[in-house]
Image (cartoon, rainbow, N blue to C red; front, side, top):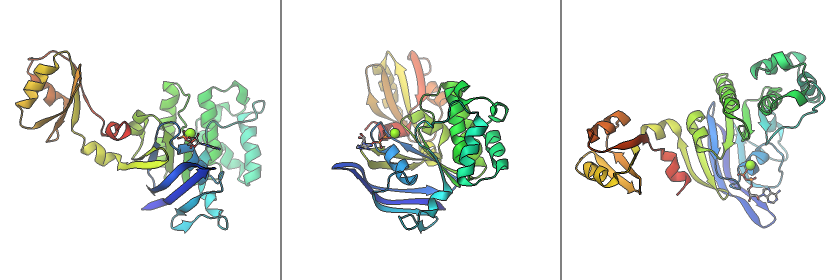
Length: 292
Ligand code: ADP
Ligand code: MG
């Protein structure tokens, strides 16, 4: 079921066309990636969904109900973290959440709940200025969860995090998804989509290039990249193999597609020691859309 439907969304900044006829269907309980390079319109989309940008055209529907200036109630179902969140640095994590909790009229109990969700319950009495960047990002997510929204909208939450920070963030996003939240997450990093998302839409210059379900994409993925100094010999071997099609040849590598589902090991065995290989790896289907 679609929880959030975006239809023919258009956004201009003066004469600059930032979102161009963008349509997306976000399935309920998905981890939906918005993948695109800088300037492709990810933050613009998220700001519109968060109600931070008011002038746009098109339709946004939450469970079939349309969002418009008369009906902003829908926004209550969204929690968002747009870019890096800011806090009162000299107040504790708890006090920061408490201020927001009073504004949004959520219970005190919920503050403890969200701190536990993001694993900051043991640090809640410390001042935010002593927090690492990753902890601040997690506190930002705690903030977005206070009113227990069904949809979480996270604009590049991994930006600026170190690898352990990214792992914690991915774990948290997976956990919240298991708890039933639909998560819309933007990123410019392909690998993040592949490791985290169930669905992805690829944006470029404010337009939708492609929407894909990751499970299907992985099932369909029978492309491999072989890195070797002896590209010519590798090419000959593949050309004599009926199940394999050579897609592209570069100086040190060769890209192939197998007609049947196969494994890296089976591709390796085709060589039977006849060519010295540096590596064989599965080639991401997404890459083709991303860098076309
Ligand atoms: P992303 O988040 O994918 O990097 P943005 O949505 O931030 O992309 O920006 C998309 C395009 O819109 C960029 O070219 C950016 O320069 C432009 N843009 C964003 N915000 C504004 C604004 N407030 N005024 C004018 N142009 C803007
Ligand atoms: Mg952005």
